Length: 81
Image 1 (cartoon, one colour):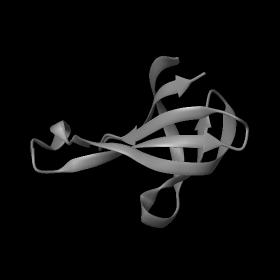
Image 2: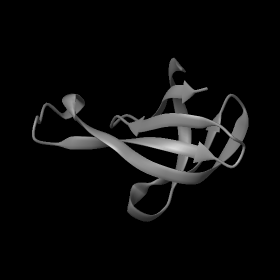
Image 3: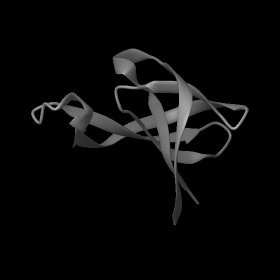
């Protein structure tokens, strides 16, 4: 089960622009493992041939969430139970 948030967040990235750390609700989360779960069209660019990755992140603190960068910034989309 999950809860939808779609909150803007600050993200530090590493190799291949993968999230390695992010800030949410005043807390810092270190990403232990992250994988691309899907690619979605970049509608904000009006270029249907560009696809952006959506990431599933497992943090050192035990949080499992989905993140994406929409061109305006990073978004914490969903948190999993």
